[in-house]
Image (spheres, rainbow, N blue to C red):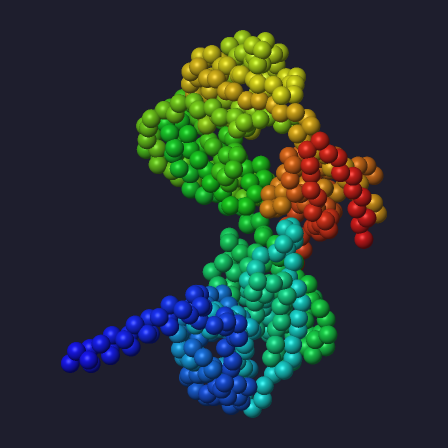
Length: 537
């Protein structure tokens, strides 16, 4: 027994010695799998005709899963309800598609999986796998291709739906609002699109940034683009189509007003308010007055009145310059009275090309400059003037500023009075200026301009608007006091000369005004001048 015990002990010790003498390292599990799953077979087979099944199974050589299926998988023509496609949360060696809708007769269907099919271990995609079948005797084989651009932004959105509506005796442009298209595809994460397995005919070609993924156009949330001419197949198969995506301006509509305080309502609206007017139809006191000003960052008008009076409800008539007219009724009650709250456009330093501006939550009525003091870092008084803009409800301070200086604006009590008699308490606002050498400048010259005016806009590298210049003749646009960073410049061909970029309108067949980007990103450095010339084609 003891002999047997020592034999076992010797064997274990020998094994430990061998393991200890082995080269130390980390178990890696071998090389990383970079091979995508391979298609093996499908039942019924891919590219089947006379299809009459309610289920498809597509097999692969390894376990797969579906990623981002809602965006990646595109079925054309669309189905409602959409088929059940699995596996979504677990892994399997096949994809199952179960139809919940009756298939159309003599129709070629295409199921494009994009890059949704990935292997279960490493997530390697089987890119752009398609399953195609026909409920008729043959497969449609025509195709078109093209690109999607954005009318205003340098880089278009991803996952744009591109669709064809069949132009027959039942077609009208309004179909895009409530009917799914005949054929649909997606750009996925590129700007290119392909529409395959199309049949001979005439079509309307559109693109949608389809927020609801329902293939219908919802103007409040979607962008749209369209090809102006009717697409005729097979004649137009050789064309390279370009669709320019834009956000339409909604038709004007005033929303029901809401009372915010004792003397104020807010009127929301859709579209452009175009000289929107608000008239109170209810009986009011003889000395009744109103003040209306827009919210700075919302599609809202602030409606203020004085004096307060008793009523159960108020009746308003809202009109605008485009023959809009509506009557709105709002509840009315005695509420708290708003106090005045002042803010400014400066969070730290004040740029040399901007005025110091005060904003108020209540309508500004008057400013007593004798109760306002502006001093610099040496506590010296700085002369200033104030311009009160009651339409925009803001006060702009103009003064001679110097570099690398600190300023203190002091407002004594009652320096500012608002429309309903509120006055400010003591307020102190500190801000500063930096060195002019901290900023950069871009000198931008256009050549070969066919028609003036043109608008030149500067944006940061994220597309946020920075500044603009309207050019009415051959001259150099100067963008100064720019913070160091990367900038894009875009040229708007202002065809109607209204000083702004005009978007398109699908039902009216209007394309947006053309925007041309300077091809290079401009890097601005401190105390640096860039001089660029752009020749328009």
